[in-house]
Length: 180
Ligand SMILES: [Mg+2]
Image (cartoon, rainbow, N blue to C red; front, side, top):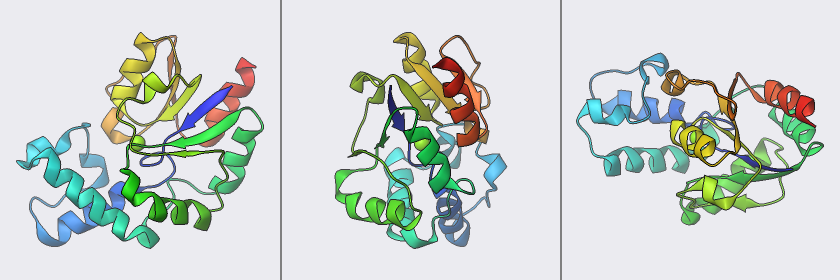
């Protein structure tokens, strides 16, 4: 079983730092729960490029990015007992060093770090653990298992035979163990 484990929103709580940068300089002030759509930046009247630029600034402060849940190291280890785990992210390749340092700091072991991916489902992993509604949609179209990490910005996604909502990696391990 090949598992594509997402970075932002699954391992790394990057949006917290994004929000801090935003709230220090811009209006309206935003809370975590207010990020209720994938393209929430549209409502702020900013471009996708500007959203991405703030995201890059968040990763420049990689040491401040908290893990998305406690005990990541052990949880990813348990996941690795079930399959081959690659960290697969849309983060651009030039951020590899920072991302690798973040993963090392949090004791996350993985086979490959695959960066700059625009269409994850095309890579043909058996399982995607991801917070993206797009991965959920594309995954179910292609018959791939998507464990959708619950986040305020994906609550509108309905589960189906391919997409299952999980609250964290423990639940992902639990679901995948049952599938074996
Ligand atoms: Mg993500």
